[in-house]
Length: 235
Image (cartoon, rainbow, N blue to C red; front, side, top):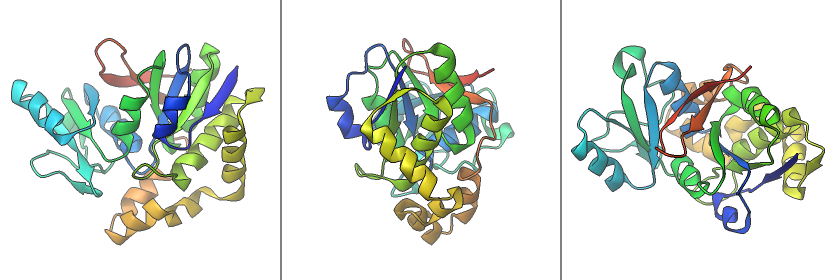
């Protein structure tokens, strides 16, 4: 098994994804929030890159809920923002959610050449590693980054997952992520560039939630035919 890593989604254009599992990571906050919504009973999550796509989907199906952000704030006209604390079961149980964010949903759409796409966060990191190990497929870790640039928290999470996978063959970028995850404590990630932005908006409770390690035994798996994402329990 070989594990590779792209520090930003743009690097996927230079990465062969066929036959591999792509693990998309957006710690602050999309993959964490999507996990929270699905664990609260949402029937599925569909990712889009543009706000107009989400609005168009709802115009065709008014039962859909919309979630997402621009500049870390809820999109006007959407039902939810991108906070993992916004999804009580009574609001989302049995409902499908279309999601659009600055970083995470873009990364998912750019990873579509992979045989399988899963979404991971710190809360599901060990579960993601076990999912990859159990299938024995080569893997590409895809940190979503911050507006097209490197992000500390996503790289840290990728390094943590890589260590848990324990593959014998890893790329130089994975080696770098492993070092990052060894040099910083998980709570240090709240002081990353993105963490400081969220803290400045008064979203410290979101940071607390996003930085909790290994609270879930499920990963988010995208159905390759329909594009809808749902929980897949591991173990």
